[in-house]
Amino acid sequence: MSSQKEKKWKRLILFLPVILAVIAVAAMVRSRKGPEQRPAVEKARPVRVIKTEMTDVVPRISGYGYAEPGQVWQIVPQVSGRILAVHPAFKKGGFIQKGEEVLKIDPAEYRLAAVQMEAGIENNKARLAELKVKEKNLSVSLEIERKSLGLKEKNLHRYRTAIASNSISRTQLDQAQIEYHNQSARVQELENSLNLLPSTRKTLEAELALNRAKQEQAELDLDYTVLPAPFHCRITETKAEIGQFVQKGQAVGSADGTATAEIAAQIPMEKMARIVRSAKGSGVEPGFLNMEKVREFFDLKVKVRVQSGSLRAEWDADFARTDATIDPRTRTMGIIVVVDKPYEQIIMGERPPLARNMFCEVEISGKPLAEKMVIPRSALRDGHVFVMNAEKRLERRAVIPDFYQDDYVVCKEGLKAGEWLLVSDLVPAIEGMLLEAVEDKSLAEEMRSRMNGEVRSEPVPIPGSHGESGQKNPPEAEREARP
Image 1 (spheres, rainbow, N blue to C red):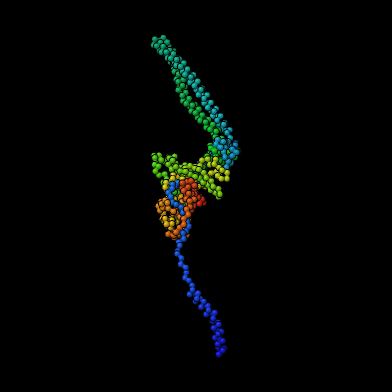
Image 2: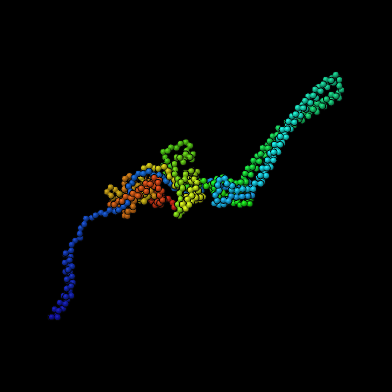
C-alpha cells in the first residue's frame, strides 16, 4: 500500500509544475486589459508648389546648321604665266587683308603686248594725218585741174567757131579736142581719189579703234598679272607656288571672307508657326516679299551657339533671309542668319572663330505673346497636372498644351491664375490626400525670367506622351541637319 501511495505522489509531483503553469496563464488571461483605442489622425504629405500666373512669353525656336563664310573667293588667274611671287600668308589658314597682293604673274609678255598695241596706235594716227594732208593736196590739185579744164573747154569752143569760117585746119581742132579730153580725165581721176579718201579714213579709224581696244585689253592683262585680295579673307586652299606656270581660268586656291559668317538652320514648319503667330496683327503691306520688310515684320532676335565638350560660345546674330525651298526629306525650312565680324569677337579659350563647317545651334526669338499660362514640363504628366485645392488636398486636373518651349509648357486650357501647382514628384499620388505645401519661389522666378527671354534654359528631352519631342541632342540634330 505504501508503495502505491509513493507512486501516486511521484506522479502528482511530476504534473504539479504543469498544473501551476496552467493556473498562472489562466490568471493572466483574466487580468489582461484590451487594446488602447486612439482617434485616427491624417498625416499631411510635404510637397513643393508654385502659384500659377499669367505672364508674357517670348516664343523661341531652335535649329541646327553649319557655319559658312558670307563671302567666298575662288582665286582664279585671268591670264596665263609663270608665278613670280606669292603673299607670305598664302597658306592654308593664313589671313590676308583687303587689297594685299596675293599672287604676281610674270608681266613681261603682257607689257610687250601693250607696247606693240601702242606702236600700232601711233601708226594709225600717222596714216590718218598723212591721209588728211593727201586730201588737202588732192583738193588743191583738183581745183587747178578744173580751172585748166575750163580753159581747154573755151579753147575748144573757139576752135569749133574758127573751123566754121575755115580759119584753122581740121588737125588743130582735133588736137584741141584731145587736150580737152585729157584734161577731163585728169580731173575725173582727182575726183575719184578724193571720193576714196572717206572710206580709207573709216578703215584707218576702225583700225585705230581696234588697236586701242587691244591696248586696253593688254593693259587689263597687265593689271591681271597681280591678284589683290578683294576683301579681308582667310586662305582655305592653295595650289600654287613660285615658279609654277598657271593657266588662265585655272583655280589656284580659295579663301573665305572674315567679315561675316552665315548659318542656314533647319527649322520644323510647325515650330516656325510660333514666330509667325507672334507677329500677327502687324499688317501686311504691298511689297511684303522684300526681305527687308520681312525682317522688320517679324522683328526676330537671334543667338548662335557652339558647344563642344566644356567649351560653350555664343554670338549675337541677325536674321538675313529664308531659304527658297523646303527640305524634301525632313520637311524643314532653312533660316539663314548672319554673324558680323566673327573673327573680331574671338576670346581666347572662351570664344573660338566661327569658322567654316562649325556645327551651330541657332536660337530665334520672336515678339512676346501676352498673358500666357506657363508651367514646368515636369509638372505635366500624361496630359494632367496636380494642384492643391483650397482644402489643401490633392486634385488631378486635365490641361491642354498650346506649345512646348525648352523645359516649359504653355497651356491653352485647364488652369487659371492663382492656383497652387505641384512641381515635385508625389508617389503615390492619391486624389484627395492632405498636403503640406512649400512654395518654390526660386523656380517660379526662374521660369518667369526664361519666358521673358532674360535667361535661356537648357534643352530637356520630353517623354513621347507629352505630345512633342524635345530638343534633340547635338548628334541627332547634326544628322537631321545634314542633307
